[in-house]
Amino acid sequence: GITRYYKFDIKLQNVARLCHAKSIVTVSGQFPGPCVMVREGNHLSVKVVNHVPNKITIHWHGVRQLRTGWADGTAYVTQCPIQKGQSYVYKFRIVGQRGTLFWHAHISWLRATVYGPLIILPRLGVPYPFPKPYKEVPIILDTEAIISQALQTGGGPNVSDAYTINGHPGPFYNCSAKDTFKLKVKLGKTYLLRLINAALNDQLFFGIANHTLTVVEADAVYVKPFETEAILLASGQTTNVLLKTKPTYPNASFFMAARPYVTGSATFNNSTVAGILENKLSPNSLPSSISVKNLSPFKPNLPALSNTSFVANFANKLRGLATVHSPASVPQNVDKQFLFTVGLGTSQCWQNRTCQGPNGTKFAAAVNNVSFTMPTTALLQAHFFGKSHGVYKTDFPREPKIRFDYTGTPPDNTMVNNGTKLLVLPFNTNVELIMQDTSILGAESHPLHLHGYNFFVVGQGFGNFDPQKNPNNFNLIDPVERNTVGVPAGGWIVIRFVADNPGVWFMHCHIDAHQSWGLKMAWIVLDGDLPNQKLSPPADDLPMC
Ligand code: C2O
Image 1 (cartoon, helix red, strand yellow):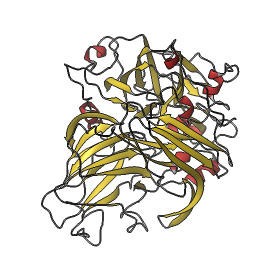
Image 2 (spheres, helix red, strand yellow):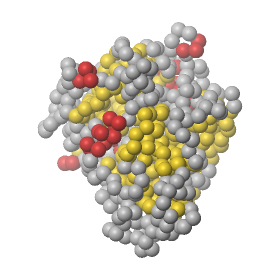
Image 3 (tube, helix red, strand yellow):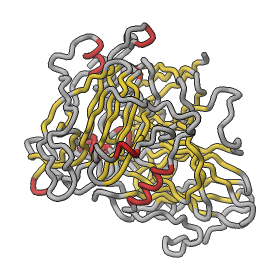
Image 4 (cartoon, protein in one colour):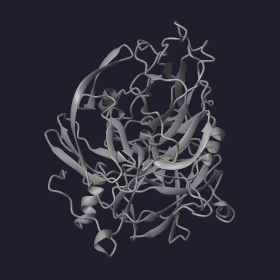
């Protein structure tokens, strides 16, 4: 097959935003970073050269990495980081995937500024399952990065002071009226918008005034098309939508906008970011002095900040292309079932830790009462070379300490331990994983991301998962298949996948703050018997710790 080559030079770059200039870590001076374009079946070879003091890795979010775990780019999970002056070549093939994904740094908070689109076109000559769009446009949503401060304090990044669309804060913030993303469109045409939520800590609604969007793909998997006024993108999710521009309104421009879906507390409220959908032939038709108040009818109708029922309905509308006659390849039988509680809590504050939690405590987050501790060497190396001693244990609990009583006040799920605990899966295990949100600090939605796999979302609901009743309503025919899913605030979600990709695979909340507090774990998937079921050895340039 064809190999596409890229070179990523990790460099500092001065970037001016919101009346300030900041020096940020970038790929080749670009922010957002370069768009990587490939076709299904292509090989990718990306040489990453690190010129900055920060250690770095690059993760290909959503790429299956079939038997190429060494290229997954997860610091201390699949590789040791690339140090200043070092380089590493990520080599992998895109197998059985096409659509929109993204790449980002996967160490400390660096993905705040180090990210870009990863666009996988279908094989040559293979059409989309929807009419060919007139044009395709990547749209990356993010928060304005305050990364330098974050790295200095050692705590989480500060709450952002703006959201951005393709790197532009837009007209509602200080000093940024000119720094607005404009999509110049022709009338009566269909555009494919490739939306990516690259924000560190936010789930986002997105919409365009006066237009409906047709959702056609989620996390690089086609879905049954449906129309909606707004979409929800959890951090780490990608969604393709068709936008049909109106045949009339020859003079009008419209705002596109994003704003957060907030179930917890940590987000600022002055939060809408906007770009402009502009008629190519008659630009600048928005009112000349724009104020947030007099925007209608130019401003999209986005759901309220805490509109969890919109989010649940939106999630329910996402269905795979499969039908009763050709059901999805979702495992119909389960070999191993796991129940994970995911949630936030607090633990005691000790020396050298930032204590941002209430009453002199430190925030902690846990899966099944385990707050994951990152090792100082890569788990995959330790596993592959049989050197796990002192690095990790394989006693991650299959279920929480207390079953089926996780919500309500006061919650009873606070017995958190720290540890580097993993779960081992034999090759080809059919896994069912129930994830139950807990509400120690109030219920909050957690976008859980699994590396190395897509999974099917077979069920979801609010309250406590009921093992007697809920499985009767699982969707085993056309569930959506994806790599990141929001565990509903105060609810549960059930996913299934086949463990057919040997390696060590991280699973974590894609809200970076929660991840840093410990809402993460890792799976070891063992080799199968046949040569094509085994992980091959790493290349010589794999960085050492
Ligand atoms: Cu997009 Cu482990 O992350």
